[in-house]
Length: 541
Image (tube, rainbow, N blue to C red; front, side, top):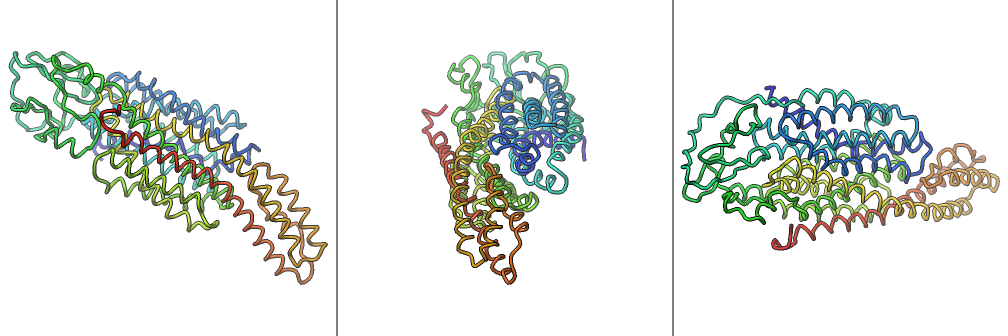
């Protein structure tokens, strides 16, 4: 692999790693809950702490990214902090220590994510290509995190999730440097000189505002020292449209570029001496409606991953490996949708929000505890995420003068949505689970009394199950040990096995019902993303 491509791959891996960490431990949470004897609300802070730190630190970290050298320093620092914090997470002696280390992980992850955007733009020689790779790596990392975490938890332990991250982060350090290996010089004809009397026209290159005039300012080039050079790739050269007074890349007009990207803020820059304050502000301020949509979709993604995983492992009592295989449908659908989707970014985001909401609503209306019922909803959610997250992230960056800063805003928005969803849905889920536990206990007792077992067997089994239900304390109980401890009498084996199936069904039904309201609330959150996305252009940002 050529050095430039290897560097781009490692930078993309770094972005995927730190954003996957927002959800990678999801399938390991039941094991964490058991090891530290915590409640579901308490263990949810393992996710909340990381996402909260990432959301709060993203914009401050982006403000520290200044030039290629600054981006490289911030990326190196972030990767080292992330690696050390990952090791501490794996060795944490208590839930409090694990949550504290997750906060530090989030700080390092924010630095890595924001600095990597600037480094990817410099390495590829294209702001647009760098943003595309950055957005795709982050979305893919968030989607594939839970299945990978589930595999590691089942084959090794939940601590392995964090141990594995240490060498990956250290390998990514190889890409966190300022130098860029420029490709051979392009053979495109040089741009015609601009006469001294011409108005200076700014052009964006790699997150900076460049001004072409009779005398070019001596600014540091993002591809090395000295005055600004032309971008290394022919298709990203800026040429002057002499008749229209606009800038285009590689012979393609701005209109063509807007039509392909469908983003926001794509209007060609006005001459510096004529650029209005409103136009300049639009190029520097964040696009609030896109960020709000990303936050609401991030909330939906949280429900799709966090709640679905808890339903499979804690509710339906599947092992982490089975749960990992079950939830892998979502990232596969997202990956395929991201490859085939076309059209305007805001329109794709709106369609994606509807699909995510529909999938979450379907998860809230499951007829029974069968894994087959969660496949179609996951396909809808995955397609919706593939259509929306990447294009909306690119839309938030397009036309902005400081890509690292606006990349930080997208991270802050998405992970603020994750934190808000956890804060909103966890108490709803916990209250519903407690209510369903009481209903399930009554239903299980009725099943035992109605069974054809002898009074002695009923009493023995009832006492064992009562102890199991009392010890659950906010969790879905496993009746298996109780049935193993209580022995059926002579000739009762078939009735005993039938009763065991009935009790399992009652508990599965109770667990499924406990998640219904949370999934429906999450569906409403995802659907709310339509409001900013469909807002008339005149009142948007």
